[in-house]
Amino acid sequence: MENCYCKSGKPFKNCCEPFLNKTAFPETPEQLMRSRYSAYVLHDADYLVATTHISEQKYYSKAEILKWSKSNTWLRLEVIEAHENIVEFKAYYLDEKQQDQVHHEKSTFKQKDKVWYYLDGQFFG
Image 1 (cartoon, rainbow, N blue to C red):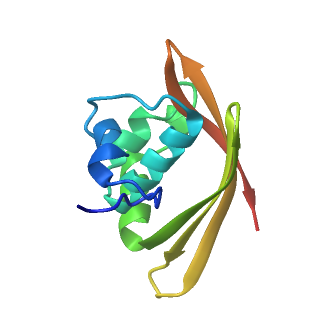
Image 2 (cartoon, rainbow, N blue to C red):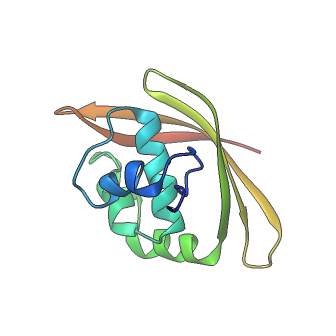
Image 3 (cartoon, helix red, strand yellow):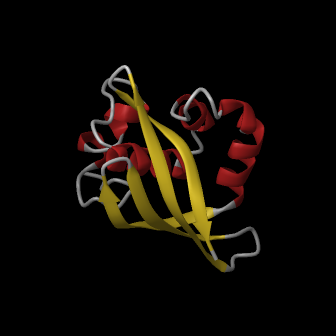
């Protein structure tokens, strides 16, 4: 049984797969953030756009999301802190030059009609 890409320790089919397949919705911002990481690993730009809050979607290009997700090799996710509507995490990856990189972000999520969406993020060096 394949472990989930988000490194939750759970099998993919019991973790992010139901969200990516749209058979379930994340119940917490952390679940949504983890599923979005898995979407980057799997190059699922449609999911990434769909889970971005409608007020922010105009700032994101599906083509650019897909290009960025495919140009990197995603290694692992580390959730630093998750509370209320904020999740701080580090996503480790190799860039197109195969150099180690870390995307460190404190993300804000917003719920609408009982569905969580990514709103925005504060990036750290």
